[in-house]
Image 1 (tube, helix red, strand yellow):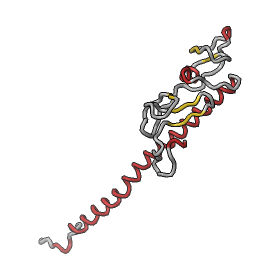
Image 2 (cartoon, helix red, strand yellow):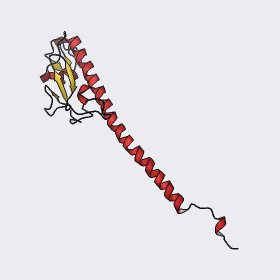
Image 3 (cartoon, helix red, strand yellow):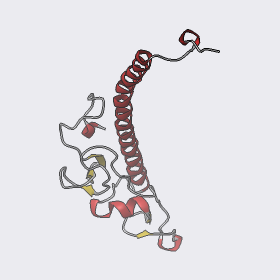
Image 4 (cartoon, helix red, strand yellow):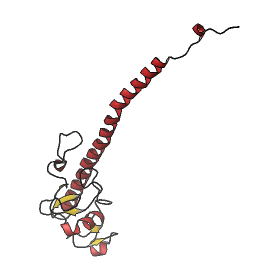
Length: 161
């Protein structure tokens, strides 16, 4: 019994090379899109964190006669129970001392995008190695990012979140 090459079925070297080239082209297209998706997720998380902080500040002001938390007490004011004057901050409610308001956050969120990614400090002015810029007079809070730092899509500045 003699074997003939005409009856064998196999891929030729050219066919295999073509398949490898096609897989390489698909990978070259897909990998950059996936990395942009991760950057976009950070931007979305940043927008959510800013919204959460703003809502917590507004709720604090609503319960404290329109007064916003002081910069020096910001973390305690957001994460602990307080009295109506915002002068006492405790880990538990104490109705006898009038400490019945809050807490408004479990913790101050960290920045998930920008040059201060991973930081959660609250500062009064931008560029002080913080994470958030807060104005205690107006209650405004925003991400501490350079004035030219853009989101992953290049459409919006991070400071505008």
